[in-house]
Image (cartoon, rainbow, N blue to C red):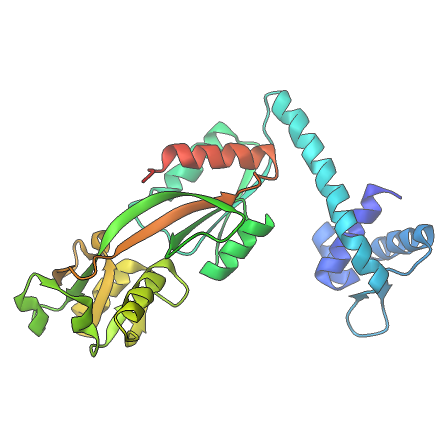
Length: 293
């Protein structure tokens, strides 16, 4: 059994086809098929069901897949450890985010790590909050950046990098613009502008409304907090957002008094520890450069 055979096997399983796997591996399709057949002969069992339009794993293939992935990961890890001990860090790290506020210099963070470790490839992906947490816990993403609205799920550690009061913003001709503060209960019947369901900001708002016995009437959603302020400026509703997101917008800002809510954003990583030396260095770099609250 060769590592190349395991690599081809994993690629076909993930791509659900020999042609797509060959394109991903940059090799000829007949070569992939031949290596998989050789692997099946060595194991004495078929790994793929080729009877349909798409290639599917057999029960034996499903059982073998995690071991094949583990073997390939072990080889990558061994190479990275050797590189690290030689003073040369290599590998690949992935950071995921829901949205990144301008108060965090993410481009500078990534560029700084790249300068220090040019042998490490960096990927940045945008995911919805639920998918991001799942990806970090599973190890598909090394580091996540997302709002938090409650306790962290099991399997994660975090560093709070943003902690701000939530405020209410309205257009200057709104009746609320005559005051300087507002209670959340006063917004019971008002159309609201808020972050999407599942985000930390939305969770904080919904939990606070539930404690007061009502559900928020959210008319408009946007993942970028500053966009919420722009919607409010156009008279589309009352926006609830972090204090910094209201800066520079042509709106009237009100303090949210009862209850006083806060919006937090956290840097998240696996509690078990990163999966590679490159990920270890990347997490340490991010924690050092970003603020801690």
